[in-house]
Length: 112
Image (cartoon, rainbow, N blue to C red; front, side, top):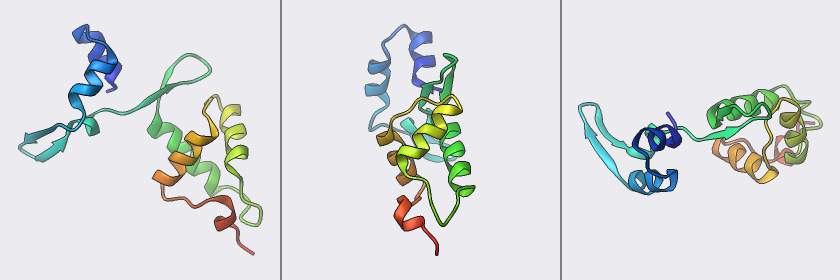
């Protein structure tokens, strides 16, 4: 589920929904849950469809796992590859996702 789904159902703006769940927790039978974790982020792909950031991170991991370890891909090269796959995201976003996945920069992934 994404914030937009709740915004559409309730009639409130997405920013309002985001503020409501920010820094809030719910006590559930399975333990305390951060409300923001119940929502996945999304981006719009070239076809106009909303795509989860988890899906983009999965593609990013796959591309990096298949790269030539002697010549690893830079963030700029990853942007081009993901753009070819229909994911139009910025280099800074690639860097953010790579850090969230604990994947080092290209020069640190290089093997001899």
